[in-house]
Length: 114
Image (cartoon, rainbow, N blue to C red; front, side, top):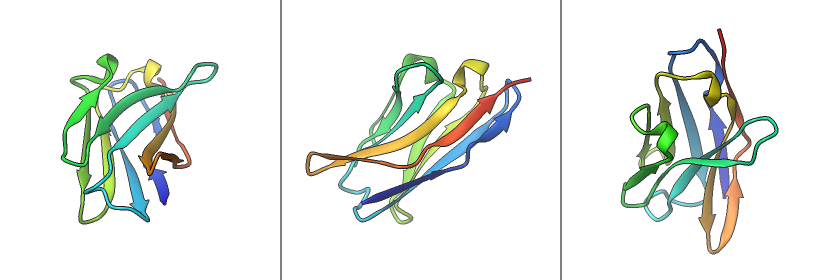
């Protein structure tokens, strides 16, 4: 199983980014996928997840601004982030658990700064 995250970058406050997580080796139709982020000096934080059935949940700070979605045909999960704030600055990782084993993609840096 491999996860490849992409789409990070530098934006100004109020800007938007869309992160992608391409999954191989397993199917999104049978696995949930999470997005985590880790800011410098802080613990990793679960931002959002989407289940195999498409149910979604968000951390309070992301509600109303972030949208997680997936394309089962492309086996890719997306995280659309709008109204970005400086406190959203972090490395973002996608993650799934299969057969009780966690898999992580390499992170993608998101920097929100004026």
